[in-house]
Amino acid sequence: MNHRPRKRFGQNFLHDQNVVERIVLAISPRRDQHLVEIGPGKGALTRPLLDRVDKLDVIEIDRDLAPHLEHELGQFGRLRVHQADALTFDFRHLARDGRKLRVVGNLPYNVSTPLLFHLLDQVDVVEDMHFMLQKEVVDRMAAAPNSDDYGRLSVMIQFFCKVEKMFNVKPGSFFPAPKVDSAVVRLIPHTQPIVAVDDVAMFSRVVTAAFAQRRKTLRNALKGLLDQDGIIAAGVLPDARAETLGLAQFASLSNVTHKSLLTKT
Ligand code: SAM
Image 1 (cartoon, rainbow, N blue to C red):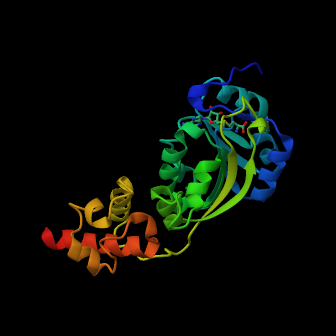
Image 2: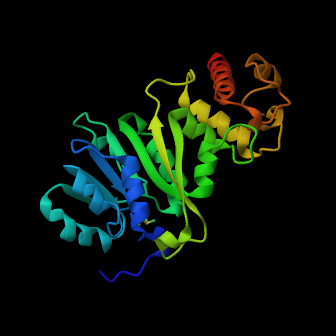
């Protein structure tokens, strides 16, 4: 197929068979599992995945690529092509038979963070996720406290999922080659919450505020949400900075904030 890669859709097509094989091996799909691929493009991952499973849903935004995939790979009846925007896609709808989804994809890097958050909102129907992303994003997802990479993305992803960085991928494995290194990550949603949070929306609000200006102390960063006494009540030092806190401390700050707002109303 003659298709000019579209920058606006983050199209960097994988052509390195070695990388394709390593990704498929990392996923190791079983025939009866329900796989969903985001951004199948020209099918570099779709083909080997389709060889291994009975059912594959793919979500592709590009109006030229989607019908092409349908035409080329749809005839076996095992592939369902959704020409749609993954950022607004209802993944829950795909899981209505009760089976959780295994979500995979070489993601468009320009929308990877909002896409990850969209998936976290529906993580209850997800068994696991394997994604190719910018290496820098994977490093942020996997980062521990007290490192430069640690921030809102690390806390929010780790609250919902176990993060395993699998391997790095060089720009030359794609066409066109992106300007940055890439990496493959595995995300496994926790079956039980690893910290007790009373209100997830409040947790997200507190984490966002705490990292909005990461050099600020929590006393300043949380102004308007939680005062100094509240921070102390959560067992956290008001002079501490967000990057030093672990999940349990963010959970505690969010629970105290939630309670204090409830008593005010
Ligand atoms: N999977 C292919 C591969 O590995 O060669 C293509 C990967 S390319 C990095 C990203 C793919 O995601 C492109 O096919 C692009 O058209 C598609 N895409 C971009 N934005 C999308 C969105 N919001 N929803 C669904 N697909 C999208």
